[in-house]
Length: 85
Image: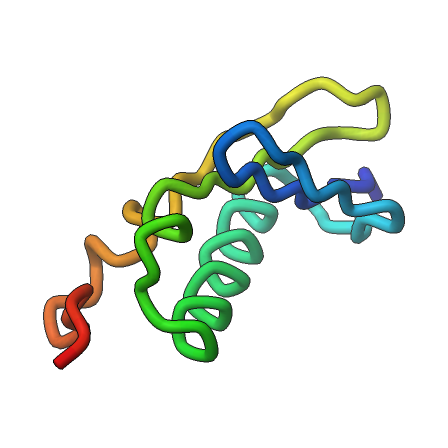
């Protein structure tokens, strides 16, 4: 099974995923990235810096397989407000 790495880019800072995860394909990596983003937003809230963050999923060769903006993870969640009251 291929190994995917879930690196988080916030502005110019890249937080590398040193271990990665073995997944069956890029579609499954997309699902994992989305779930990771939702968990971060649930625990940290929709902070402005996070709303500009992106998860860069790379393969074992370091090639970017997909880029998943944090805001895109919220598109399928109409009941979640990105503002805090």
